[in-house]
Length: 147
Image (cartoon, rainbow, N blue to C red):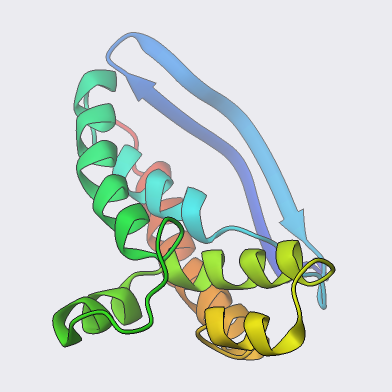
């Protein structure tokens, strides 16, 4: 019995005869914050791919729209309603928002910072942790089912 909040041992991913990942172990202690939202979505997709090229194509197909809708390149205030809805379901938005807050905190006045952040910090953290756990469980399960 272990006291780890999350533990994975011996993860392996192969693309045909090529072994991309072998014997990866990690653990997260209780109370530790572990950033695993983005990589787990990638791991979840990678576990189902048979070729490296297919993985790269699908990741670009998924990641580029998510990045553009996250608010990393332009502010999400005053955009059309359809874009607001897409940004709210985009997990990258919840990662960009706290990064922007931390990066600009010392050089921008508080009222300006409040106008460019979208959610409270706790909302961003809980959404990232929830989605990370949601992606981690099937990703670890799929890696365990290697042919």
